[in-house]
Length: 458
Ligand code: IDC
Image 1 (spheres, rainbow, N blue to C red):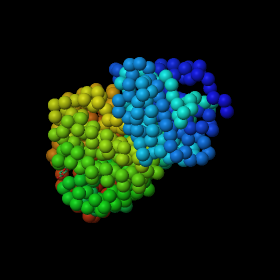
Image 2 (tube, rainbow, N blue to C red):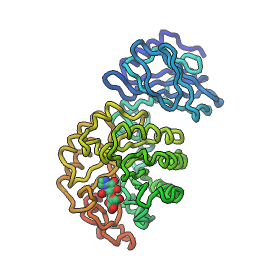
Image 3 (spheres, protein in one colour):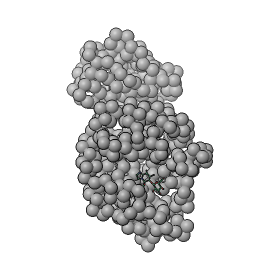
Image 4 (spheres, protein in one colour):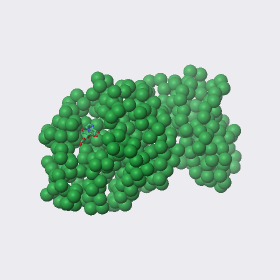
């Protein structure tokens, strides 16, 4: 098949510069590479390149060469090894992603300093142009146009499929923004009898929850005491969520100490195992650090930049949520704000940032920061309470409703602390419910549980 001429390439690149994404389409009989800008800022952008093997046999390695206009350089890259000569950057496999099966693809990402888009692209020495239609863009700059429509009935996972970050929103497989609503476990080391077939049937069936967050504490008699046992428990709970068509949010619940680096090796081991186990599922979301505290954003980012590639090596399309400074307050609880993240985002695509609040403690100034941050960052409220940050006290209905209204308006998903019968105001069930197995209906609910059940079912 005849390749397109340089003139066509120039045209494609001109379009690329004007829009947020571009394709280098290739003949069906070759390797192809697609370049897409995922987010951009004043004088730089983050891009992803997808290498497709459109041949009918496996390829054992790949090489992508991108030439940039003067003034634009490549900073960090991930999922690839980078070399530079003049204005041309050569990307080769990171090690684990060299082989691409027939019809399969892999991708890598980088940060460009400067606004210039590539002016030339080669994949395995051949021009990245071609005559076939490109596959859908990996761009997250906007929801990708849907070629099919979602089913109108079914479980949350049947309706929405594989999720993907699209700009500042979370989108379903069809490119539509979705807001997932659900509940978080308490520490699974303490409340095993709250997560049974019966309780999860109620959560999925009666409550119509989209999401089940599995909080695996690392300290406090958690993962560190029995890594294999806790990994197994998390895996089983993911399977239970999957059977019921809910999204499963795997929470690596670090809290004290607040520096995620303390648990870096544990995180790598744990996430390597769970991402390998669940790689082929569409419903798994990874939350890599519950609540960093007492550490800078740079330290959190450094942790994320080491853990995310471990997940991506097994599950390249899984959404990852990164905790933020000051107990996942976007920095606010430690006197900072989201600007530190906007100017120095983690080095990976398909990532969201966690925000946590407790309605009786965190009010207007926190809501204002969430509203501001949501304009530039994909946010997910992976944990919140209707009470104070101690997890106890009375429900603050007014503040809770102000939060729900904001999150609904911004389409930010959430998981409530907790789907348990702990003796504290944040628990959804009265003490004794889990032992009795009386999850159905409203008779066992606390005030917080009743509020959440209504919100989630709506
Ligand atoms: C709380 C539990 C409480 C437990 C304590 C210590 O509700 O029973 O004794 O942890 O482990 C968070 C944390 C979450 C806290 C929760 C309420 O992510 O682990 O749970 N909270 O204090 N951040 C803000 C509040």
